[in-house]
Amino acid sequence: MSCICRGTSMLSTNNAWRIPLGLFFIVPSIVMAVIWFIPELRSGVLTASEIDDEFSALQAAIALDPGQSSYWEIFQGVNRTRTAIIVVMNFFQQASGQSFVSSYGAVFVRSIGSVNPFNMTVINASVNLFMCGVSLVLNDRIGRR
Image (cartoon, rainbow, N blue to C red; front, top):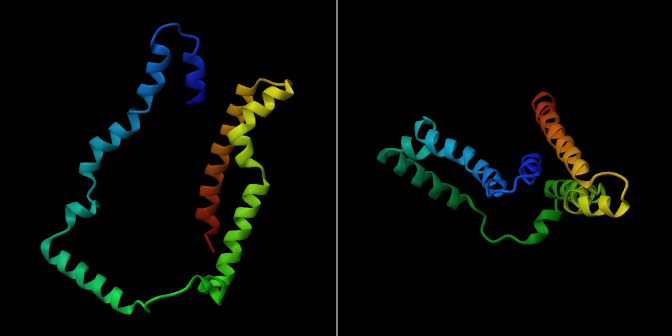
């Protein structure tokens, strides 16, 4: 989208802002048109008998609830490992500097004055998009656990 905005910024007419804004409506419009034909849509398949079954299943799940719990449970037993994994992941996400680059990268590159900030933003977005695809493929092949 940044490339489209960059390309339309050279236009002197109202199309400079209308084209990027109009592109934001393409995907939601397709989803709104096609969603009614998706057979797995839960609200379309739910019958009156299934509603009663789902309601009784919810009541059974509520009955199994142990009651009040405290925040200290996240630091005990198996939950301690899960909490540690999340804390370490968030630490390294912040330590990598990616949030800084995606938020202030263009301003930082402009202050250096060595390369075009827009080009660096496009390169960063392209690398992010590519690596998201790689992570999806690896997640399917390796698995989550």
